[in-house]
Image (cartoon, rainbow, N blue to C red; front, side, top):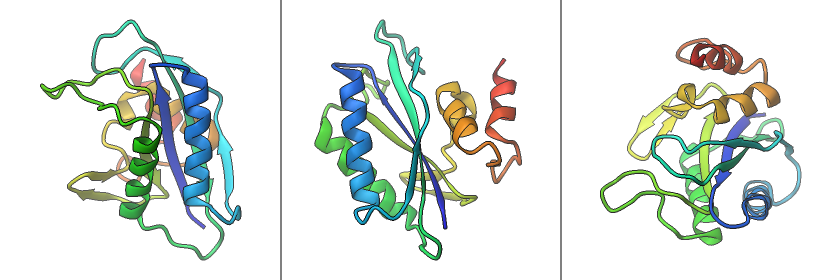
Length: 163
């Protein structure tokens, strides 16, 4: 069994519907047989992170527990999440100069168990998770015992450091 943590956000359009569509599509893509346990955090409204915008984000965490004995290919998982994201809305996440931009949907792979991966286009755990309360709060709610494999801190402990 593996525990996969995903964060889904939206700050353009019907945020709630876009997130609902993303959750359904991610569940279908990752667990087409319906054998995994899928849990959702409450929706959090947050200010944009890393750029200025008047449009608030809705964010939620998704935790998927795969059936016992199933392994997770993190690169394929990321590719699947990016495909879902592109199917829902192909709007870019960045401006032409590389800055963050408002977006209808954003799906981030946050962690897979205690995997540490650092290759081009995939870093696990997510390299900026410790800076984002809208990521940490769902992980703390859904999986309070999860610990960052490099720091040993729980999501709640990392959240406390943000204050």
